[in-house]
Amino acid sequence: MLLSRTACLTQRISAVKKTIADALARKGYEALTPVQQAVTQPELEGRDLLVSAQTGSGKTIGFGLAIAPTLLGDDDTLGASGAPLALVIAPTRELAMQVKRELGWLYADAGAFLASCVGGMDMRDERRALARGSHIVVATPGRLRDHIMRGSIDLTQVRAVVLDEADEMLDLGFREDLEFILDETPSGRQTLLFSATVPGAIAKLAQSYQRDAERVSTVSEQTQHADIDYRAMMVAARDGENAIINVLRYYEAPNAIVFCNTRAMVSRLTTRLSNRGFSVVALSGELTQSERSNALQAMRDGRARVCVATDVAARGIDLPNLDLVVHAELPNSHETLLHRSGRTGRAGRKGVSALVVVPSSRKKAERILKFAKLSADWVSAPSADDVNERDQVRMLSAEDWQTDITESESATVDQLVEKFTPQQIAAAYLRQYKKRYSAPEELGAVQIEKPKPRAEFGPSVWFSLSEGRNQSASPRHLLPMVCKAGKITKDDIGAIRIADDLSYVEIREAAVEGFLTAIGPD
Image (cartoon, rainbow, N blue to C red; front, top):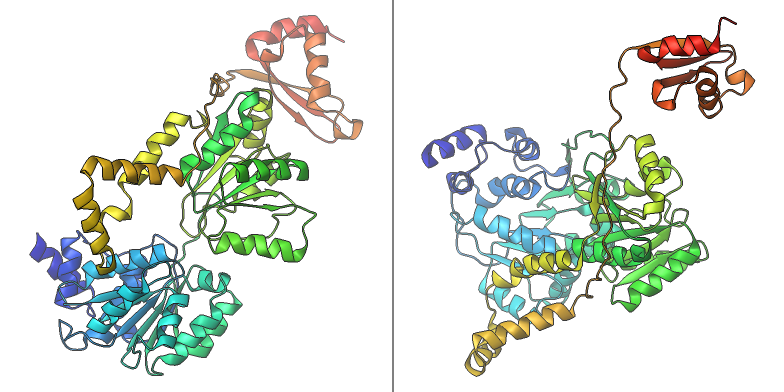
């Protein structure tokens, strides 16, 4: 099977070397995603590319394949490592490390050495790795610029540069760093820009630093909110704020917005969350433009992860990695619900829109969801046990367990192992992990009843009434009148349609005879 997959992939993509095709086959690739196919067309080999692709579309492997001919030339393997041949620049440490892992297995058979330069890591370890030599360097803009200015990285041999999620890097304020880095690389390099959208700032960057770039777009048209999971969470009236805390803790989204209906609620909830240890900012009408900009920048650069806002104050904002929207108070219309929720589930990312519903607001929530033509899962808010269970899953799947021990950590690790038992080390790790998060809240029990779909109405007869919209007729007015006059119940009435001067009422066939008898021939 491995040989047949390799041959098939090699036939499909003329630009892919055997070492790359072997790596893809081992990973189970039988076909490439649309973006991977688009950037590996033979006529695009070595070309500068401006690519629109959604997150989750396989773009990391896509640009790994696109730069392979530039890096490998006529060979299947890379030579001895020295000054880097390729730079991949990503907006965040998490994304950069993910890219490094993906390119690591893709180029393993080609003999590639990879190094990373990302903020928050030990710079001495990075300098040592760069000094040993590497073929591909994956970096965040600020840390890479630091290495360039310190002379610890040589960019004179760079053949290809990839800017991953370029639009987000510009949103985070990295334009100056990116321009500085690109100016330090050879002018004959291959430059690939990958971006979910191509606003004016991206187009200008492409024009300045790319040569005759080919525009490639694989962003598919999707229906609005197709990637949003709506959850209506029933809570006891006294547990509304506690439920919000548990929802935020359960999902631990990179960015979350909590919507309130009033400034007073924004202030109250911001204070409550801040006191519970959440990194939170507020957006409400009384903020100055400067305060608003600072709050949004804190969300974008990771200093804050939760934004509590009113609808008016949050209008027009767009945050990267916004995976969770919480409706602390129900919106007053279905249009507002759609507007709030539409801030998540973008660019291929999955999002959650959580409605906190107290029993007295159940009917309102059902009505808003119906008018918005949305289907929500009616569930309980996450309990303390649910949050703790989710924390344990996150802890055991953390990258800490897969990351190699660095030279700067080695001595301390040996000292810990020598001095303490495995149980003591594990307990200390667990305590430190728990200190990073606020404890969840205990919630009271609440009965969850899913809305019952209305039964099929069955055979019926339509009747007309001689008043309509022009006579101020409305279903609310007509329903009790028809029931009283015809001695029937509302269950015997189906649809009511209002025209300009007439109205039409659907009556169950079994009730028609009694209805006609009751209203009489006149």
